[in-house]
Length: 171
Image 1 (cartoon, rainbow, N blue to C red):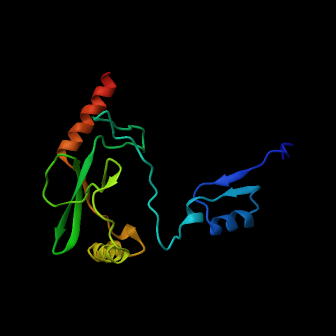
Image 2: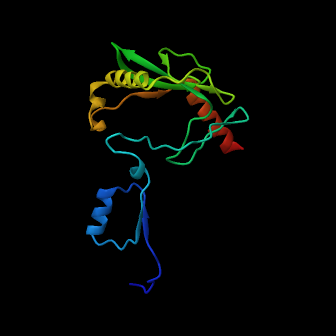
């Protein structure tokens, strides 16, 4: 409409065949579509959308403080609490803390070498199935809004975060 016939419009970001069809049906003036996640994964096998963030440099804890993108500093451990064989909640802690519950993060490589042989596909499949069955029943539905899984931050990790933020503001 502004006489820019040579300008091309490319849409991307969370697109799949249904969203593209809706945009085309609505007459959106789009010349091409950039499909990422839905090109390589199936929605019936959900993805975990995440980005790697630096949490330590030269053995010193670091964090990202951007609104909506903040991270927790330093190396961590996650402790899972159980109640009658069902997952009851997780606590994110510093790597050197020892809290009640099962420590979930275990090293698998050191110096570029595996620490133990890879598990078989059957073993991995059985582990995933057991973990799924241990989820609270409300979390095993397609609508995760029905229930929230409790995840807490340890007092030590919270204090470390506050200290680093304070140092950054004053420095």
